[in-house]
View 1 (cartoon, each protein chain N blue to C red):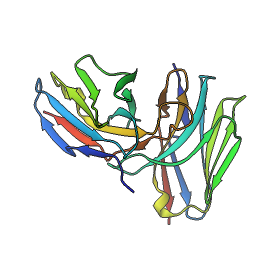
View 2: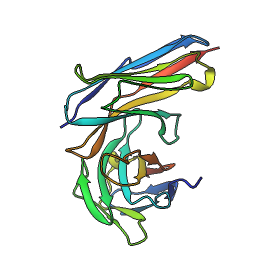
View 3: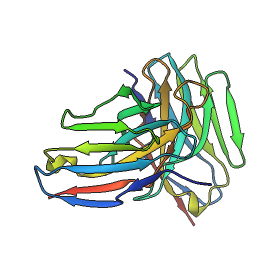
Length: 112
Length: 115
């Protein structure tokens, strides 16, 4: 089955700096890669996603890149703000297994 | 915009009891997914339904069962509860289970505590 690894597990940045979270996946059949933001005790919120036919996608301060050959994808947050502090999960959707497999999460702390 | 609704939001049960969690997907969404999230863990896929039929199965214990009804809402039935079943249970919904419409939107979750 699919295995998604996520790094780092914790990340602290100063407000205004950039944050990068990286994930790798194992199943070459995976073709959809969403990122979720989860605040403590709340639901995971879909913040951005990318499909395997696209290399990069940007939405305001958030961007995701995908390297299908290397099987890794990354989340980039620029001009971080304290409200960006949360746990971020990457995930991979395998068309063959038809399920989302999540990474282990990154606790992002933006220091004011 | 309407979101995924889950009930109850909190549930306390004793060991060996049963529990039923309910999920109402976003209107027009025909696919429902159930996830279990333990403290400090990532969501683990349990089971999914597409057009009222079981679509895929993940790490769902045999003590658990689920179904999707004609109005697309889904229920997760949990029997012989164990302490280790204490977790947040999320339901997510999407429009279609193919590769073109697979954005999953999560409900607020049900926090199950087994004592």
